[in-house]
Length: 260
Ligand SMILES: C[S@@+](CC[C@H](N)C(=O)[O-])C[C@H]1O[C@@H](n2cnc3c(N)ncnc32)[C@H](O)[C@@H]1O
Image 1 (cartoon, rainbow, N blue to C red):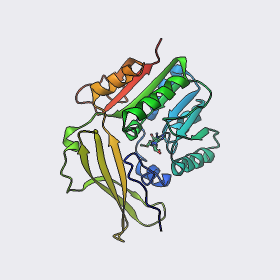
Image 2 (cartoon, protein in one colour; image 1 turned 60 degrees about the vertical axis):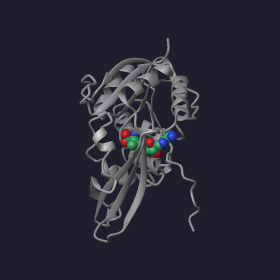
Image 3 (cartoon, rainbow, N blue to C red; image 1 turned 45 degrees about the vertical axis):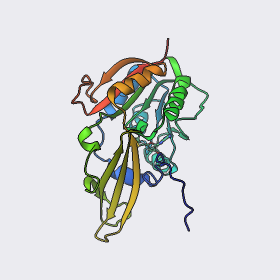
């Protein structure tokens, strides 16, 4: 019998348990890699990626000669990251850890927290603890970059009784096509969007469900949070082409520097 888990909306272990699924689902997701490579080249190494997952960004940066460390909470993602790096004969320092409490005893010229991963931090204490760790690990002239979607009200208020398409990809275990659909309920008090992903594999009709509870960061709030935690905002882009952030931007990509 599986032991019962206490309810914890930040728990994302089921979603990320098997990094092979994550990689197959995100095969086409590459537009952020040139952006982070450019930033890393400008700032120089060493670089730290928080919530590095399967090394989707970490490995191409290392391949380009950037000295990089990847930190992630989920062993299932790091397992896939190690395999990806080994397949390319690349050595990367992978750390199993929590971005809210890590001490790597070294400083970095660039720390980045990409692809909506900050949405896994729900309460003010988690966000402050993470930013404190970043400040501690950033070198004097270092930079911190965080990227997260620009919230869309129409998605937050969708009809929770409906399913919406997310992705389709081949099952890594040969079970046919994996089809993911989702629904969500947004809690305006906590700003957490409670999302469920339903995975249906092949024609079996079997379905598994994983929770993806994402803290929503509104644009002015995110800027204020960074400033309140001692960072100075240097640039805010709306996409990876470095276009300025506007109301219609899909992303919030913010580069900050530590306090002088
Ligand atoms: C959307 S994935 C991003 C992975 C990778 N950076 C990418 O761009 O493909 C989010 C990652 O955040 C990790 N994560 C969630 N909470 C975390 C925490 N508190 N500390 C470190 N990693 C965390 C998950 O394990 C998962 O790998």
